[in-house]
Figure 1 (cartoon, rainbow, N blue to C red):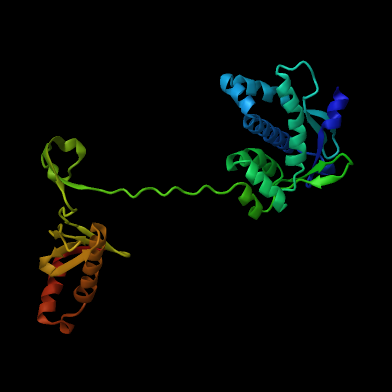
Figure 2: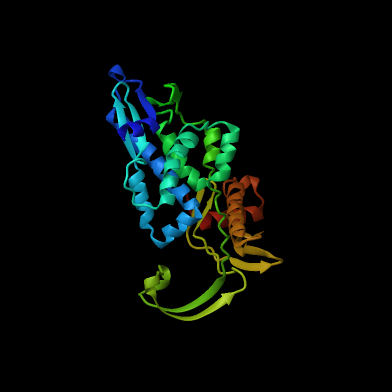
Length: 326
């Protein structure tokens, strides 16, 4: 029976590149064995559930698949320590089986199919890739092939060889990225639907000595009335204006007027004769910050001799409004 398993087994060799005598690191052996076993068991599960009759049995008793995977788990049936060469087979010849004749017949072929069409597949051959992409979903391909490609990645400190029936070595290596992208296509990012905000005026009973100065949720004792607004024309009163790398700290908040006219938000501040607009509230506020910055740079920093009387008045207003620039 062991000889039969050795006959049907697939052989592989771990050839370390940076160890004395090409001896295999324990971690390398564990990685390769674990990844081969994971790929095979995932393959078994995927192929089993593609069979309508077996799927029906699984839906009645999910434990049937767990038992099958446990029975078919790969066994090391031969071992050579030179560069760690091993023969691995699924336990498909040992009676008695817990399963029906149909499943027994299927599982005998499953290991041979995995060995021939997965392990010894030409991963970079276009026809092979087309067949695999048509047969398996992206998730199924990931479960079968990622463990193999991970075990044979170029950054591993060893080379991994498969050995065919004639003793010929085949370098099992991860395909180039252009190929792996086809095996494992990146999931398209789902575009989040843009949130549409509404605006409302809220009248509330608030506590605290002077809650209006630093209002928080805990200060709101009772909401008295909510009036929905057609547009976001709530007050705009900045006490800091930021544009690019400039930060203008103001002595007090600006009492700006906000209106919605001709499908645009309009923000104005009469003391500086400043009026801007934007298609959104955010655009209008950004336009206000830019315009304030431009006014300050063009007038507040200019010498009186270069300004008209009206411009000097505007300059003095700006200097009175701005407390500091950072």
